[in-house]
Length: 375
Ligand SMILES: *Cc1c(COP(=O)(O)O)cnc(C)c1O
Image 1 (cartoon, rainbow, N blue to C red):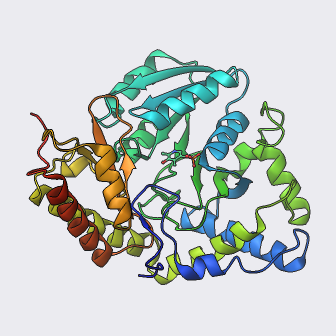
Image 2 (image 1 turned 120 degrees about the horizontal axis):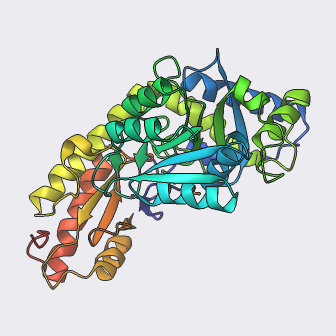
């Protein structure tokens, strides 16, 4: 797969390695009110709604900024002032949603599991039965902190059974793991261009139930992050309220073409699963241990426990891999020292094998005999 040899491969959860053709789609300027750009924007929105199987019920509202901007916009727009948010937390992105609710002055409560344990649908069932004030449940599809896959269908079923509304942060899963509005009930899902859809950073989006969005007038504590306002303005004349990230959207359209050509969610998911399998098998052969058992691991990013060998220093490991052309990711766990390697972006089996060879050479240079962690 393509990337100039002088550019490092990003084995990170985004921004990530993109194709040359996606980057080349940015080599022209677009007038934000120009007919061509208006058509491009409408096509991107339509295709995103279709990716979630949601044309009959939902609309896509794009937003300038990184993923957090749209998560904040989703919560601020859809949880009413008198509402209450229950957040399923097993990592930093769940914690971030609690922080957003606090910033907005919305009532909220956390339902926590440890970082290496998925969200618990039975505990959610009990919590919703005990607290009728909760109007919305928020869940992180793949918690990028650890790489764990949360049980979204079960969470959605419990939430719907209690007549509450589900808000999903699917930032690091959307486009590679199935999420279909005809199969699970959700009020909104938030994601961005620069993760599994392999676009460049700068635009995020929410796919929102149209009725809920139309009913959300006046909820948002923010002007620029008001998805209701953003939607109505865009429906009126096809234009953005404020300067759109034109080049980013052009690259995003190209990235969606490449996603479709690869076989959509299924094809992209298959490549990432294969990347993940090669990575995990290869690292285990070098003695490294994953934080998660294979059945909890999403094929997005893998957390490895820090090796016990005193010759292993992460900073040096990182720098040496970087010089070999691979950028990995520090850990974000509170439970154990760790580091992460991503499986997503424009990379395939050959790149994963090269990365493993670089890890093996780096260990030899550092005098690290094995990646085995302390027990
Ligand atoms: C990347 C990510 C976000 C958004 O992070 P930004 O740095 O704002 O793009 C939110 N949730 C999850 C689960 C993510 O992986």
